[in-house]
Image (cartoon, rainbow, N blue to C red; front, side):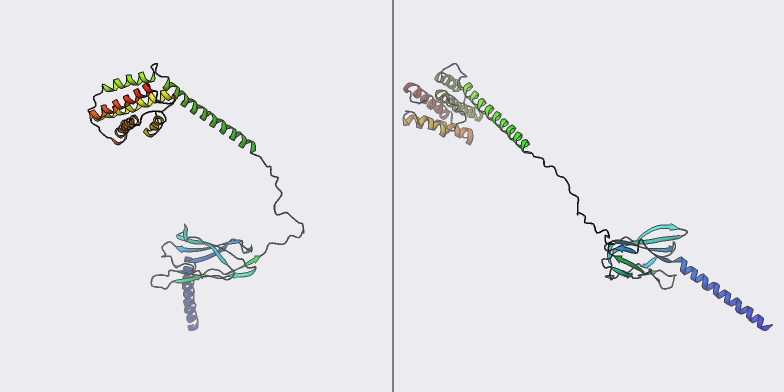
Amino acid sequence: MMKITIGNKFLKSLAIGLITCFSFCMQNGFAQSLQTITNRKDILIGQQIELTIKANLPVQSTGVVKWVSWPDSIPHFDVVQKGKIDTVSFNNNTKNIQQVITFTSFDSGRWQFPSLPVQFAGKAGQAPVTFNTDSFYVNVSYSPPDSTNQLRDIKPIIKVSVKSYLWYYIIGAVILLLLLAIFLYKYFKKDKKETTSNIAASKLSPVDEAMQELEKLMQLDVQDAATIKQFHTSLSAIFKNYLGRKLHKQLTGETTGDILVHIKSGNMQQEDIVQLATALRCTDAVKFAKYMPLPDESKDCLQKIKQVILQIENFKALKN
């Protein structure tokens, strides 16, 4: 009877111990787990493999202490890309953490991809728990040879049609030349028309028109800056218009130096040429250098130009 009692107590203690051990294993085995998933294990040289490392943790767990520690290099394998470590889902009070790694191999043969450690947080007051990923073999091979022994072109022959653009270039050049010719024609025609219209604008003779304009100019009161500038600008324009009509040329845009060259080609006295040069250079100083002459000086310029015009008319000192 005593033996039976002892046996019952032993069995009872053994059962309690087994249950406790099983509960502990269940708690640590299912509360934290690590999965290693590959999309293929047979590749051709250079093909890529996706390795997914997934950890299942309780929601209340503090999580991973240290994720996969990658070595500097893995024999026969090259890591192409390491994805981010993401929390992908929550199911039944558990959360899933995963990382996708892409790698390849350029060595033919059967190679073992090593297992890698991951540390999970233990219970309060306990050390972290380390799990290892599964190790697996990868078969790396070349493309199977072609058994048909047929010769094939690298690329099929493509027929190329050659299109000539010569006529487009010829037509474009002709259009460009026509436009240039039209532009030059209009430009010279306009210039000639302006010259003719300026010369034949007045029904008076060149000298009569000049004398008439000079008489109008003498009526101006050359006291303020604006009137002085108008006086000398008009004085220069009157003489250039007179000289242009005499020579049948357009001299409006000519400089004082150009005007003096035309005058020197005639039979004028040197004294008259000097008087004209003095008057014209005074008008240039007023127009371009903001020179302000006295009223008597402005009137003197007008008289000098009037005298030169009369000299040209009386002695016919200008050659056409």
